[in-house]
Amino acid sequence: MLDFRLQVFYTVAKRLSFTRAATELFISQPAVTKHIKELELAYKTTLFNRSGNKKMSLTPAGKVLLNYAEQLNALYGELEYDMNLLNKAHGGILRIGASTTVAQYILPKALALFHHKFTAVQVRLITGNTEDIERALLSKDIEVGIIEGISKNPQLSYKPYLRDELVLVAATGNKRIKKEMLKPEDLKNYPLVLREPGSGTLEVIAGAFLKHKIKLADLWVEMQLGGTESIKSYLLNSEALAFLSIHAILKELKNNQLTIIDVKGMMIERTFHFITPHGQASSLSELFMKFARNLTLD
Image (cartoon, rainbow, N blue to C red; front, side, top):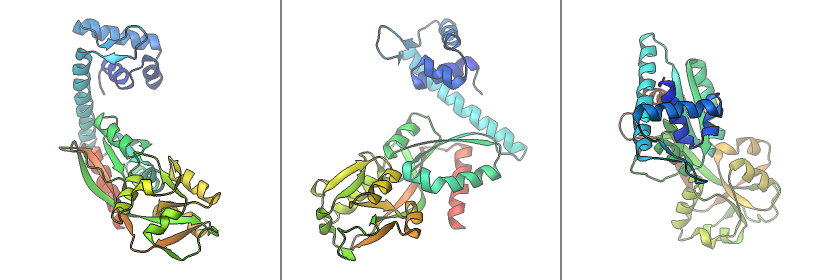
């Protein structure tokens, strides 16, 4: 673990808030201020800009210290893992980020089984859309991410995890559906519910329509919602249609609440990807990725 003063600085620097850092570290705000002042005295420099009502920001010295704190934090994590490995135990903290569909419908089982096998590993999961998870990885808030999009940030490494299919669904008994199969161009005449901008699912859907020379702007978009559960609930109370992951609708299909509608010549497949920074991924990240992949082969 980092020297506590450095841990306090790291938390303040990542949150840019003394109040949030105090809450996260379970100490008082005056204690946070004291530790930061001690560091500034030790290094004979100012670490944060705190003038007026402007939002707190790092000074050039603060940015340098944050860079070293991030490297030290990673090294301590590796040290803890390797020392546990000597005792044939896996321990430490693994911070995972997952886009919404993965976090809700894929990861819970994998995380439960992973925890059962590696009880000394503390897993912390954050969720968001694909852009959120990529940003969290780049800012080193997480060690590994799992996304559903197809974007390729040159600063990140993408490794296949699991295949998925997006299917067109509507509430069972939707009165707008008169055909058993629709053509892609027919979808211009139906109200659609799509995910929000920045969503990996939306990115994949847009790519699939472009193959049929249809832009999202050509579609009748009734609503954009920020999560699969919201979309499912909306469909059950409307005559709209939506493309959803097959993993996300198994219960509704079984209960005959939602129905899959075939679209001629349109099969939307995608791959969920692990993402890590370029170079050697952390030991715990590698352990989790290997474990999760093996589950898909069972």
